[in-house]
Amino acid sequence: MERRVGTISRGLRAPIIRQGDDLKSIVVNVLLEAAKNHDFQIQDRDVLAVTEAVVARAEGNYATISQLAEDVRKKLGGETIGVIFPILSRNRFAICLKGIAQGAKKIVLMLSYPSDEVGNHLVDVDLLDAKNINPYTDVLTQEQFETLFGKSRHTFTGMDYVNYYKKLIEEAGAEVEIIFANNPRTILQYTKKVLTCDIHTRERSKRILRDAGAEIVLGLDDLLNESVSGSGFNSRYGILGSNKATEDTVKLFPNDCTEFVKSVQAEIKEKTGKTIEVMVYGDGAFKDPVGKIWELADPVVSPGYTEGLEGTPNEVKIKYLADNDFAHLSGDELKAAISEYIKNKNCDLGDSMAAQGTTPRRLTDLIGSLCDLTSGSGDKGTPIVYIQGYFDNYTV
Image (cartoon, rainbow, N blue to C red; front, side, top):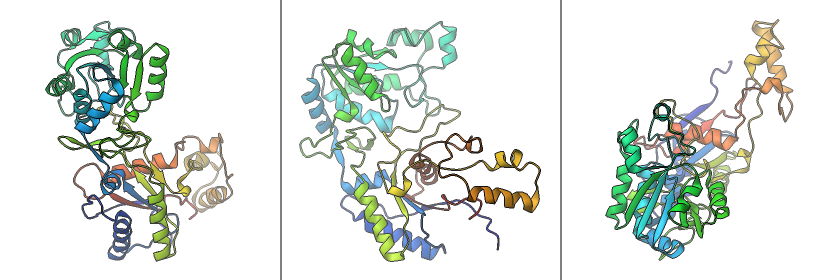
């Protein structure tokens, strides 16, 4: 019988994971029970993915905002701190801002505009044109910004993040001044001690600030990168990738997940005889066309994966072959010709015309995005995703 189904992505329901749980056993048992109860076979090169949230929760990788404040005071001096380029997020950054503000007497908050790093807009770019404002050179105070554009409202939530962040800082006991600018050097007119909060451009921002004469330059990856008064920590990413857990607690990004994914892979191999790939995933890497939000607020899509997920896809474009190399064929002859071409394709297609438009991205970023969309971020209850057929092609 001819195969009619390609890639399948299944969200697997799991128990509520708590600190100290044996996550490896839970994940393995969920997969085995799902395969038995829903009539599918575990195969070599299937992909089992686990969201970073439950990995960190099982690790107990939490910290309080008081512990964060202690680290801020120790590393940035506890006086006036420039906090630049934060993303606009109640879940991702607001809880961190509380702790940062508790560790300082004054915060000079510098917001990028018209949007933050991941695409949350403070103002429509067309309004900048209408008001003759150049975001690359013009520095605005909060009063100037609101006089020009009014109160900022988030596209979907309606949140006024400017005044929300201002209130958070004041409630934490710090004085606050808000400016809008896109050049990191601007903050040095206000303070020489800077915390740059961008995610994917942080190393560039640090370099620019150091070269411009900053006394202290840290990123979010430099806070809670070791335990503070018994807190959790992330040695590589600090508070990057953290999420709000409670009103005074953050869940940090999980530490090195390589041992975890390898142990799950080995356990599945022992129980089924199959070698599957295993990864831990966080945010997917995709952009919303309406809100213009780029999803990736984590430092990476996958903080740990097995070796078989290394690299990028090596695929040819079937429609290109059908329209070019085999344009003279149809029906079974066309199918046979394309199948034969795929079977004999080069191991590295590189810049071959037959591979154009096949999304040259890392496998972990592509598969992690599929997992994030499958599991969602709400109440589906599927923190484990099982993918079959991802590495198959038209001939298999």
